[in-house]
Image (cartoon, rainbow, N blue to C red; front, side):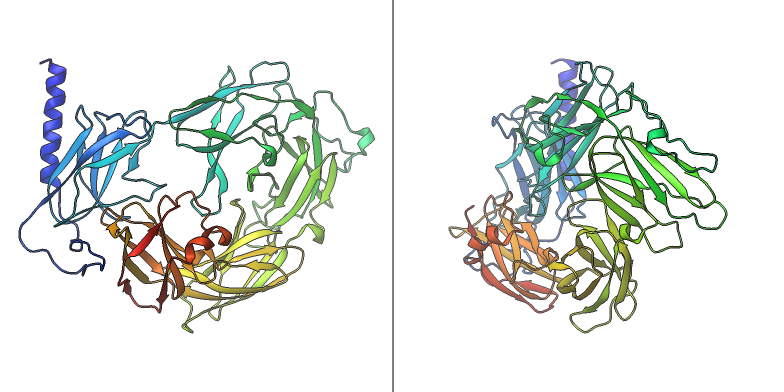
Length: 575
């Protein structure tokens, strides 16, 4: 036996001993399963202990994975790690001397995505130990990591170093299939970039940069500081820019090609940047506030990319000129495209931010002192549906529903009144929160804006908003079964009676190995509860998608009780 092998064997033995010694008991689980779920409060008698054992394998080939690190934790969002172990040569692991309860299993190994048992974007199946419950023979699958990489070049085929490469991913966590940011990388001197340790999924790649040779001359002014006419402004053949470019040769995100990535793939995605004449924006800014240290706040230029605001494209320059009457700023080095320009107010004053949406095909001027570039007022009143007082320090926020960074918020008065000023046009999710309280929009109506569920679409008119709020405090507990037997790993979804209602009323979880599940923070109201096998890629938030499953679901009425135990098991429906 070599020293290295002996050392590895000793470490494995020690980890097994620690697994037995460090485990402490979590809360006890329910008794054995039947068509009618057992009383979960019934204690277990006797000193019996249990074990959890199984094998870690590659999800693509089924090959056992040795030296994978398996950790055992108490179940729940605040679970504590109890023990760790390394898998043997045949990928097996084992934890002994466990008391009855629910446990979480996670595994990591180099070259694979770390995951919990039956992991679905963070939802996992807890292993339940107890009398008449099987917790051995667990098959914990790990997906090999995937890679997207390539080279960025310019018009002449030369590599572009220092380019910002942006990775996006189709995400279905919210039930609506949104494209979200998934990472950034900077190309090296050879123009190379790489995104490693990627999960299986659908991706998009974009790149932004500035030509290394670009020269953006500033605007000339007269002796009084006023900009000279355009025909007297300097021009340069090197005043060029790169527009943000997406795979495959697209200049806007709507035309980007999707990249389907499977476990273990190494996909080469090369991008080419093309220089175009740059555009300039002249901006007349609001006057600076009086007071020491306060000056003009530079406007923010952003571009819509997959519904998110990509701030300040690469290579854009900014400069200002001043005279006694006004302050004028200028953006240079901008590629043609659609942009949003916003100026935020200095702290402690003014009427909020101003914004302008501009389609740039030629250079132009924007007057930020004009009312036309200001947003609209959104005001109204919110009340608790129960008639109770609003929680202290309740705040209302308008969060960009497209996943962008725009967010307007203010404190709600004690009587529920609020007012938000200069809100830019767009679609927003209305969210409310307070210290120590979980609030959801139960009903909402708007005058001056389209509304649906908890969303409003702000246009050019002032908006008057009215909403009733509810506090979610009920925990629903039940069991999922398929063909009369407990099923772990099913998607559990609580759907409001009106599927078009606020998404804040939905609740989602995953059934554990004995079929049990809990849904926390449920708001009073009428719902349909469904369990769907392999339902994790469904756009479940869309009424037309979830409708076929509702007819076989279970009606649930929540009246505000602390807990609700379902008397019968929920039948799991196939995808």
